[in-house]
Image 1: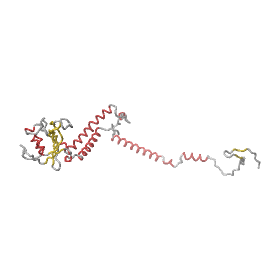
Image 2 (image 1 turned 135 degrees about the vertical axis):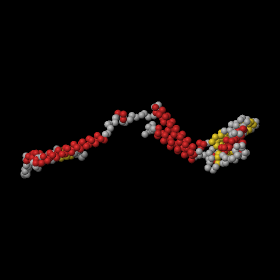
Image 3 (image 1 turned 45 degrees about the horizontal axis):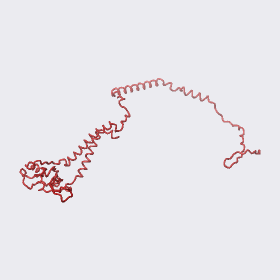
Image 4 (image 1 turned 135 degrees about the horizontal axis):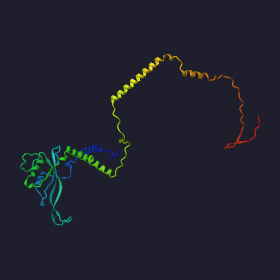
Amino acid sequence: MDIVSLKTRHWVVIGLLTGAICGGVRLSSRSDWMASPVRTIGQEEFERGLLHATPSGQRTLDRIVVHPQESSGVQWVTALYTQTIKIHSVAHDPASPLVAAEMTSAVKFRASEPYVPLEPVKGYSKPSGVLAYLKIASERPNAAGLGFQYAWYELPANEMLLWVCGCTALIGGLWPVMLGLLVGAGFGPKEQPPLLDLSKFRSGPKYDAKKANAAAVAECEMLLALIDANERKLAAGQENLDAEPAPVATAKKTVAGIRQLHAATVEPGAAPLTQEEKDFAGEFYPTETHVPHEKR
């Protein structure tokens, strides 16, 4: 079996298994935000960054992502932190004048559950999670343009489901179509003709059990009738059974016509001829030497 002979259902099963394996590996190797090299900001800097913006209008905290709560009760928040700094107008020239510039870097914030803000916020009287605090903070007048999202795809069940569905759609749906196009374009192996063309064969008559049983009964009755007829013939010709069969009599006549062999003394025949003695000479290839011999 080659790769071209696999059906769509086979690719779907392969996609499911691949998604399950990739999802399990991804969950087991999930990064720890505590050990991440990203800079950690404090609660005061976090809350101030939600309400402030740079002189160019860029919000101090942007692209805020709230990650699922960990088993320890800690919920991490990641964002892009933009701040205004002073740098020299000419790089590597300390004598050049300082100018204002904006620098953006990735940061993280460790939020405890329940989240208690440093300053009271209207509408957030009962402390809950940091996600609820961000919803209320985004409604304040000086927080226009504040956006955030919850990383629901990082939940273990959701992440596994995404991996399985994604690999199944890619391997079980898209790949068979692309493989068919490649084979149709001549990039795959040529299709071999079938060893047996089933279209040349037709199904036989339908098996009828009643007709088969009737034929078997008829054959049995015919066999019984034949046995009865033979028994009647044997009973009628019982007197001829004692007579000697013709083949046996013919065999006896044939045996009687064979001549009987009798034992007798065999006379000796003529004496065998004596072989003439010969002489041979030679070391490697003996040859006959024609030397006359005296008669004995």
